[in-house]
Amino acid sequence: MKKLILGIVASSLSYSAATQAKNPITEEMFTADPAAIVHQDTVYLYTGHDEDVDNSFYHMNDWLLFTSKDMVNWQAHGPILKVTDFEWADKHAWASHMIERDGKFYFYTSVYHNNDKPGFAIGVAVSDSPYGPFKDARGSALLTNDMTTQTENDWDDIDPAIFIEDNGDAYMFFGNLVPKYVKLKDNMIELDGEIQVIDLPRFTEALWVHKKDDNYYLSYASGFPETIHYAMSKSIHGPWEYKGLLNEIAGNSETNHQSIIEFKGKDYFIYHNSAIQHDSAIGGGGRYRRSVAVDKLEYNDDGTIKRIIMTSEGITEPAQ
Image (cartoon, rainbow, N blue to C red; front, side, top):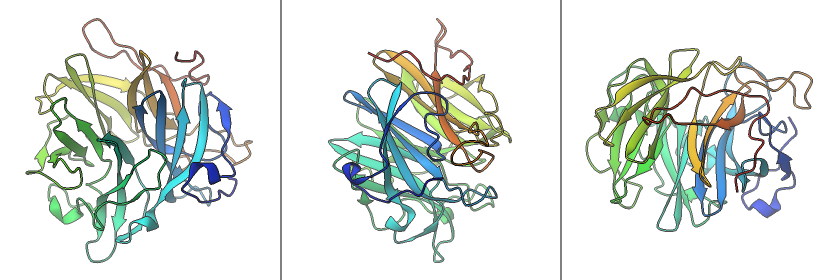
């Protein structure tokens, strides 16, 4: 992997470049755990960053940003936040989620807490711009491992995903092995009520919530190696009706993490795989060297989602 120059302001990053879309969307670095939002006429895609030091674990120290105005060409903007920007965190820049509210951009993410509260925790950073700079919004974790007791492992509070209802109510979905959600206060940096458990079959991690017409969709990674499944409801509070498999195992990646968006009237499924070839400039992908890819998403007439077809071409028709 080319050594990246850390920076916060997009214009200062020397390696930013527009790339023609294919799957994966970049071969300049390893990327994982996509979280995309649409703001005005642009898609902002935030990813984790698998380092190339070896292929023995998830070595992740910062989060990256890519933007597109047509889903075909992507611009890299570099690291927008590092684990060390959370003074209470030790390591592991794992999955994240971005949401905009009242002109501010809130970045929720999974990191490992330091020794006073060991285990994975969820932090939140904030900025006035989707490009950053971002700063810790609380100076402490939003949620720590000791706040949930459904499992004995210390990584059961990861993969935050935020959804804001039309009435302004905001909810954070999260979890590993046990899916959970909790209401957020209007300030977006405090919990507002009890943590609730969700009934989903064979849940592993990677919750994502989106809405299409009057249907709510809750997608998630299942099993291990992971496939993506989904459920539907008429309410953000459920009950959730399981609808089946959405995306198969993504290459030789044991993990599978999705982001679903609508942009300029078309729907997209963003995920990661391990498709980078061994003869690439940064070496080959693998279970700990993942890469973000994009394919189209389509609905049936009854609102259910068609099975995702993963392609090596990616999105070839620009969104207009």
